[in-house]
View 1 (cartoon, one colour):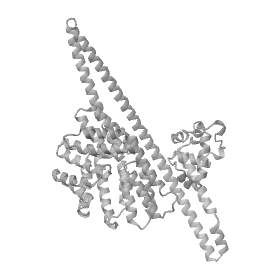
View 2 (spheres, helix red, strand yellow):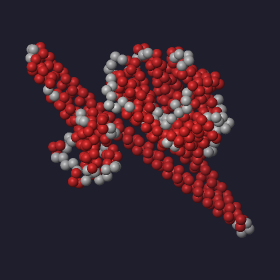
View 3 (tube, helix red, strand yellow):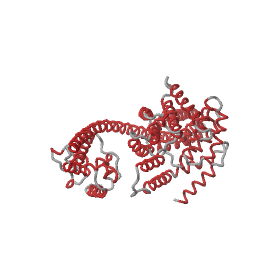
View 4 (tube, rainbow, N blue to C red):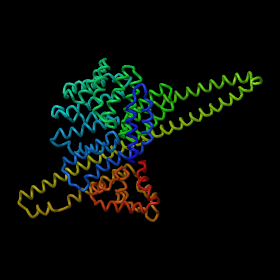
Length: 542
């Protein structure tokens, strides 16, 4: 693994010596990195796992927990959408009602970025509306302006060819101007936004000069390096300098692959250039890799951007097929006219027929790939509908449970206040020592969780029984049909995507060893121990 990593670094350094007039080494390097896609992904996951393991067993303060969540978010932000969202959401929930507005803003801004990337623009806007920029320190205020600008740019991208496009661009420019006015003159935020503003006001040469001077300060494989090179490609596109645009897109794509940055756009843009140049096979290979990385990251926005290119690919291949067929018919007509005289043309016809068959097979393979891609998009839509249904059910249950717990807390406080007022200290102590309130709350939580889960997955228990040996299936009476056992609650959490033993133990108020024992026993009762939990996660809501 170490030798392979060294080889990849060597290839990247060698490629960076190339120029805009000789991009062949860059293409070789990019192809090599794509070939080692799995290794680079595994290396990134191992680094994140080491970060998680480093603090296990340590007692952390609330601030340290928030800082650790932000570190994990920074690792996941361009790697896995759902994991980045999970850690930053914990901070937002924890800090929302505190007085530390800067710490809350630091997490809320990051969460707004994740929501924007996946296309949840309204949720991102509402979250940013909770932040008062006038109360923020300079660093957080600049981050806030950056996120507002980014959100409006994403919205403009989705609103292209509509009357709303100029409004979003104007809002993005407004926040960009605030950054230019606020950020220190030697900071990256100032240089990046000022260069972008300079390009859009008609001076791409100056913008390019600023960004190219800034680029050596950042290492290849970092997200900032990828963004700068991608932006330089856009600047050269404004100049209609295709050679330099391709050069910087290659640098950006190489940085993305080397750093396992799965939330990227350069590969897709590069495939568009190759497609326009007629290099369809290479363009499709890069587009397929872009689809793979978008699926891995979980970005709905990137999947939609890649999906928009599907009709263009079909059009190109249909054109190639039509051209091939037209040429074939012409040659067949000529051969039919002079076949008795020129036997050699018959051989040539056979060659053309073979080419036609090869082209047809290639087109069929492409159609199959596109069909599979459409099926994946349909599956993604089904998952989104399922997620919306889960969200609606659990929000309702959460509000009801919160209201009941608040009511119980108010009643208990009144009762304790009366005891304290009447100086009934023994009764007060007994009341404070009693675990009845906590146990009642846990029962209420279990009841709400069971009912909400079974409303979404009404056939969950029967589907679980299909995966278990007949002698070990769950046999619940009619009176228990709306309640889950501890084992079934563990399986329910696994179906919801919560697989970490510690998280399950925290939710169910149990020990981690108990959870581990239950999971081991459940696997032992199943037909297929290795695939049991994967099958649980596939149980449908309907």
